[in-house]
Length: 440
Image (tube, rainbow, N blue to C red; front, top):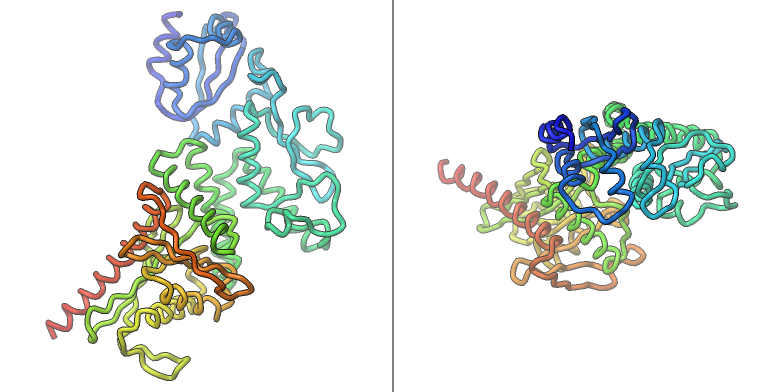
């Protein structure tokens, strides 16, 4: 290896970016991306290769250039852009012998988005992005983007909205064609182009302004929708397949919880971004308090924590003061009071510290507000660490599923963390009031 090249490799940072290999004539022969530039580039020269193409590539590397980026998702987009621009010899074909994939936005209206290996053969193309070396990455990119900004992918427009529309993965531009739908869809296409062009930060800033405007106009449903888009984009650009193991575990936990709800609860959530946990603390008849904690992306969102003093709280539904140690009634009171604040962004799931009666009370509070089909609710018992899942059908609980997860389950660990945090926060508030009573 050339001495100058050795020195360059030694000085490489362990940060995400794109690396560019050149031959002795200074011609670009290969472009790749990496989460850690130092580790990835070093592997070419310190590992034994069995692939003929890779062996030939390494023999021809005479110089190296790198470009640092903030995260691996940006590296992926930059890699595709540079491959398209320079068409290096060793990037022309993918490892499986097939051509690389491109993401296509069709010219026909409403615009269709799809993947293709031969964009030059496609008719009526508005624009395309790529090539992307991994077809798996392309599918994952489109899957994630579609959850944030639903788009049309069908070749021919159906006469009525399809399954993707009912799954909220398509805006239904086929059967719901009107000017307002088209205007909104045009905005969606512009935003998807921004993401694929690597302008995600600019898009997030724009969405943040829209969210504030929606909240100011008291359109809290729209503000919540935009917040979901911002949070998902932020997670996407914080690391593409490169999140630390701890965050990977949390993502796996959330996905496992979502699958449990789909299987046993009868409620289908496309994503779970925010989970709220509730507990009631009533160690004496003098003090009855409740807590609400919030977790976003599996992390505590302490700014959203709330505490409730239930002692003597007036119950408008019964025209009576709440003055007992009834946990289910306490949970219902907390939920009712929480749901009177539309400016607090709603969760996708609620975890109750308790069993069937407490979960049932929470479900009734959601049902009274018409949110029982939008927000899932489950319980986690302290005694045996069993999940209590109500199966919902036609807005009624028709069955209770008691589920014991393995001790090493990442979903159980996350739910225990939320449950224990809600208990801790309630206990803290109880002690504050108790201390105040003693002092007085």
